[in-house]
Image (cartoon, rainbow, N blue to C red; front, side):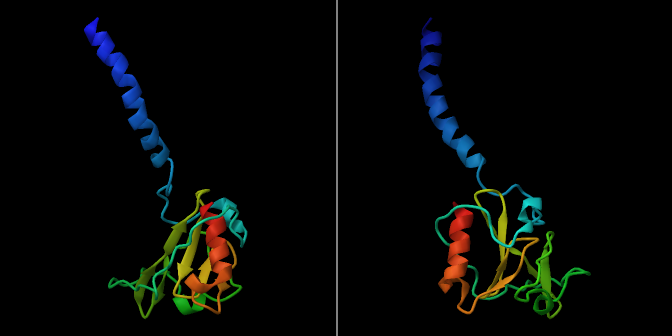
Length: 147
């Protein structure tokens, strides 16, 4: 009987610990690093808004060579062009520049390049006159994304 009472006391405490863990586990990336989302065919993220994320101040070319088939960053990242649905990164002077993805509350992502470009995979690439973190257009997209 004492063992039964101890179990009854532990159940609420265990539930108290497991519920937040389950909520956190539901957040974040689905683990698909190819940034492919069939719902991402629109150029505008379809989420609702909060805080911004500041991308790195410049493209971070890695020290490893870009895989064969990766497009040159300067060729790919053009205002009004379409970002491929499966975008792993681009090549800058032969070095790999992996995609910088910002996760959205819906599971969709926004990909940024450098200080002035962003897009939803499969959507139109947007170029901002101001650096991204000072751009109202980018801030609005991130706020919508982060919901």
